[in-house]
Length: 192
View 1 (tube, rainbow, N blue to C red):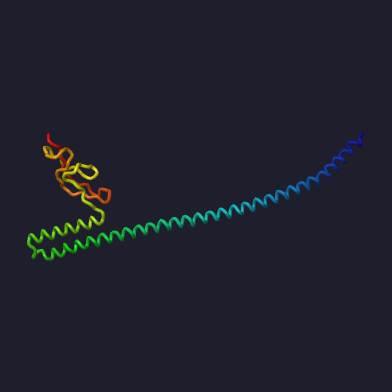
View 2 (cartoon, helix red, strand yellow):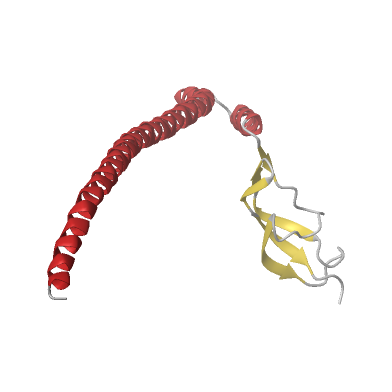
């Protein structure tokens, strides 16, 4: 009986020795699979990093393109505004030229000629404003409109109905559909 325990360790060592190479083979297979998986993951990581770099570069290019478009639009807008200013000032310079000519000959003009010259300047200036879309706000006889008119006084005992404009103190103007400057007016309270 004593020998059996001695045989057991030998048998267990043999079994252990027999299992070790199997484990080593399994371990080698596992290591090879792990190495293949690691290599695959490293390849995927490398591709992902390259894709991230490519996407970052695309983002930077797109951002630069957007900035260039914005700058180009700002230049185009500034050029357009400058051209419109030039056109307007050229029209105004024609009026200024006529005023300077009239001032040069003011000593030779009589009262009637001076009035005629002033009416001509007024007409010419109104034409310039009208060509730019500036129109006078209608006032006397019109109903009061707080978007177009600024009431500076209320007139009692007027022959006009309540809320009607009876006098204009300062002309108002519109630019297209917007009020450029409201007209200052006196408004009727009606007969009381």
